[in-house]
Image (cartoon, rainbow, N blue to C red; front, side, top):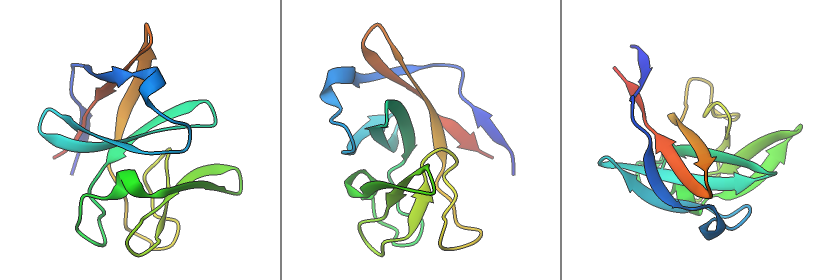
Length: 115
């Protein structure tokens, strides 16, 4: 299994559309992505909960654990590191993390593909 990034960035929304510590779901090249702005940083992860199997991660609870920005699943409350996607509660479970940046006030996402 190999991780690769797509070559193109997709504009998703204006930065001011993201409320701090609140998720937003976006469809990027056919993939549901959850976007978060927290602690002055942007994060983009898959919107699909790997444990519950539903597209709900954008509705998760943003927090931190030991200074690490986290997201708790709204279904079963597993906590994920927003930087890496790794589940802090269940070893071996992870969310795909995508590239995200802000350019000229616009949030752009570059999908990570797992092959």
